[in-house]
Length: 325
Image (tube, rainbow, N blue to C red; front, side):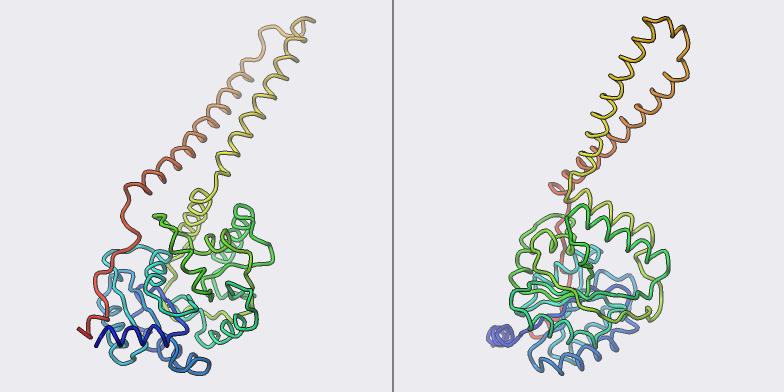
């Protein structure tokens, strides 16, 4: 009986909304309620909400998810065994999604649930588009967070060849085929937006409202933004290695030119014992470059080891589906 119900649910589900949840138990009820109202206006009875609890350390988030799953048949909850981060939590949701279209958003109500129909209508208007992302013309973040986001976008533009007119955000809708392609990437540390950019150019932006965080502080401080940016560069690009290669060849060329110049000056008697300071400075400079290059190479080796021996992307500890058993 349960299998028949699951097959029927999969058949009727048009939209799957995935939200990674972390310490959001106090406003989960409001989030679920507002999503339900918004989705009923465009796809009544044809959507599901997948809440992935990213091993929240509090004692209220997972119980709040379970209560909403018991109250609303379209809510599904998954509790992860250990904290994996936003992107891998989304991968868990993608793995469970049943809909023909998949939407993702944050859990802090800065992504306004009432804007979900805008994403859906934009996707319906163009059959060629594979992904529609919300564009926030005005972000309600701290100034340092906004500067960090701007820098992150510039890095993605450069490293992945992202069009400058496209803004990547986690408030998006994609077709199931694209979601399946993302799932096929079994990297230990997936980055959803860069993966989308690398897979397709059939992406569209639409303006979306962005509101202030309901309470608490974002987990994406300056340190996390820097870490995420570096991971995006190293996980999917050899640009740092190429940069040091170019710098090495350039330094070698300059050194050869200087050698010729100094030799000519020596022939004309223009050089005596002088040059000690220059030699020390050159040794320090190229020694520093060598150590930096070894450090970058070490980062790539560490990523390779992580891909081979690291833990799986996620492990589900519990889920609300078990209430039917």
